[in-house]
Image (cartoon, rainbow, N blue to C red; front, side, top):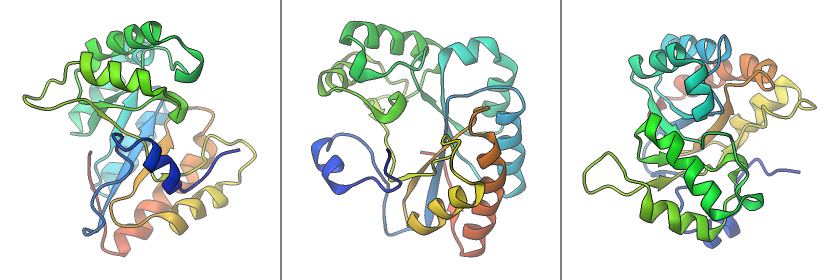
Length: 211
């Protein structure tokens, strides 16, 4: 069970997290979780470039180590990088010290001020630890813990590619942070939906930016 549109209750319960950007500008923030990996991440990069779109990639540290050349391509194309832990840990089932150390291990590779908890599941105690101990590379900038307001559902193997596309079309608005996954599990739906989303919203006068 998952919700396509993040409910207001969650935003109220976790007010320090970033759920969406300004609603006054026609800008959309595409994000991609779980990469970088061969073929899928490269498909995403090629598709984004075709629409002159920028995005944010929340990378797993272990995948960066395994595929440094693909990680380098993401950076070369001027996309933003986010920390997604080193081993895709689920915060609710991980003790705070293990979670922190795993995130710091990924932070050594990413050197970013952006973090997204895998599965969107994180304890308030873990939020506090990360925001106080993870150093942002940007002067006078704290770590931003990024959630989303639109979940494409591309990870759901029971979801049709068309439904994945419609999830995004129906729920996206100014300032939306959208989650896709550059993973093998999601690829069937991602391959179908991503170019159509880019085409649809570009035609509506939106731009796609990094966080």
